[in-house]
Figure 1 (spheres, rainbow, N blue to C red):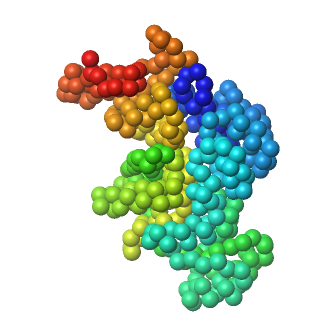
Figure 2 (cartoon, one colour):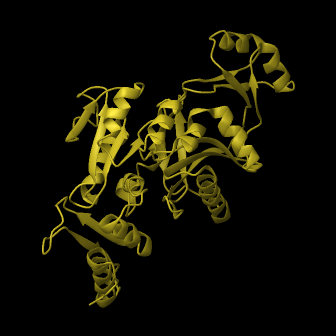
Figure 3 (cartoon, rainbow, N blue to C red):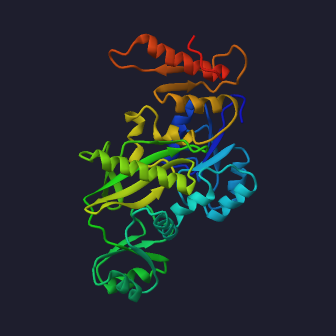
Length: 361
């Protein structure tokens, strides 16, 4: 913890998600560190405190974590056993290794969601063309997925015959088969969850994928019935709670004739939530940074955000001492809102941040 009373947050990975999280950290007053593979990575170009190392090296991770209050991630590729070792050594890992496992192992994720009663496509592990043929039940095509390591459409194959399946299997990658889902469109439900179980949901969005990469996001999803939107949000919040997620969870969904099916999970800022930088009061990157519990001013900040999400707090990154300006609070109203009411909300937030009590005077 720095003299500002705000945590030192370390993000493993130096890509665009870390870059945008670095920008969010400035307004929150959090000290932000990045573990990047080189000084030319996207986040390293804009972050003051950069450590050079590999997410696949336990010594590099341990050295990086030693200078952070909490570590988080801009990708899912840190080996689970390394995360478990860091957590055992006392490092605060958010989300924890037990939760992150379900983004690293698609078979484990599908199995756990099915156990929770979450609707998912029919699936099974496969190790031969005969397994795939049996799985299809005579209906081609079928989807083959790498159980680990795939992202942005990589590690996903749509096969139309046993011969095509055999070709994919020849790569030597552990695979699972999934039914080919004739969906109407793809949706994403993104939620944030704190360490003490508070949850918040963003509007459900429509996503458009091209070659396995998210090309467009429309927020909120046009024409989505209100009951289906609520179902998607409640589903995402339930998954976050059941898996013990701290921070952000993006749930990618298929909208089908038989209802919603969960396709993928991501426990980090997600491309389906980039719109929140400009379209929401609190961006996904700010929400992810708020996923912890710490004493004093940071704990008060969490309270203020939960009590009145319409309040915007900006910290200056200054060391705490009596009489010093540490930040400011903004409340934006709409035409016709009483000024006295807006002023009262701002004063209450400022009072709680300063004294730990809500006083509008």
